[in-house]
Length: 562
Image (cartoon, rainbow, N blue to C red):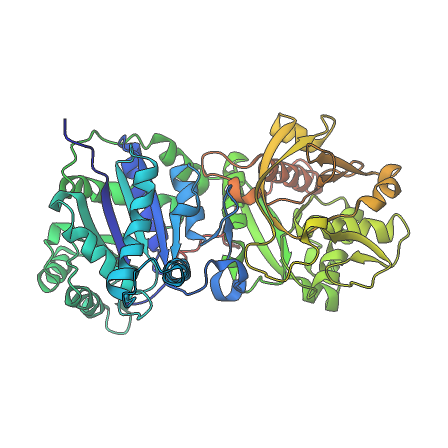
């Protein structure tokens, strides 16, 4: 019996960034998994940072944290959500990791005096990283490798050279190159233009990579003549030129790909004979997204609201929770600095719920605290995540417990009332990268709580990314108040969840629940938060359910964002 060989699909991008390689790769992964294959995915990031953990969200967007504590690219969130399987540190490879490994080996003398070069040393290390998941899980049928950046970028050249070599070293049916490119529509001319795609593929071919399948990102469908033209000039059969057309929700992309025959083409190129995928659950998901019966307005109050990718997983979690509640979730983006300057009523008077997300740094904190006070007093549903929970603890200490100068040690090291303090094992740490409390940790819930009712279990595991915690010195101060510590670490040392029990729905968590929400399985806390928001808007409007309208965009997805 011949040894099983894992097949590789390499996805590259051209013309411009942000075309949606992550969504396209995840959608293809879903289709292949639905056909019965064991699929894994890898994101190659060309930046020299070891990981995105120290990067400003305005530079890179969200940092997606895995169970094993890895800080990774936000595309791994798409991989987990579409495939409904957890990733590990093997699934994100960066230039920084590669060079760090090679230089460490050179310092040890592993290369026996050789001159260390991009070829072969860097490319060999890249190939080793791409092969590692298959070695770890020999049953893997297909690994989809997404190359970050755009063809022509100097940073991504070693990765492109490495995958070119992998194809040469493999049997022809074991590798497949797919190129995602842009076919822009020029309104003044009334035409789709193929020249950017031609130049992008030309750049790939110049380095020895011939794509077999083209995905053409476009606002208009591709005519047969356009597909033939693209195929002719790019040396690709026209039947393998597929449109990647703008859609209402990213979760519709795999359905469109299957409708157009992309997964059939991939299977043919890889020599795979498989049955049709059962996409009924995905079709139901998209139908429910497009046809909700009610609508709620949720404010997200933070300091990165001008860059929605900083809260990508939160946006997706609201999509999932809305679907399970048969509700459109309209997100209202509110700058915490505006709250501080103009007051909460100006921005929050018409909302059905408030979420304060995680974050770092002092800027905007007072606005978040004021927003929390507003919704607590108005009985508007509240959900605080990480820093959002910490701000809720500070607000309660100031306005209910009488500690007017209560604050977090993170922002004021000389505060006399640090209700939020640095974790003991974080003291003295100077390196910022990878040194926080990261990854999955267990917690035990009080059974008399909204959180327990949501999870339906008293033992949970959630992902963390923070340095500061609830200060146990102040536990007794809260004991006789309505703020209860209902989720704790198993040893009882760390506070994981707080609830205000005389409030319709007021929950703060130290972890990041958004990271584990899936399209067909909304996170329990997000689901119940939206349930509470629906109940609030029904009560606010009498017995009438708030109607769905197009006045606001649904949470997260506009036609420009796939």
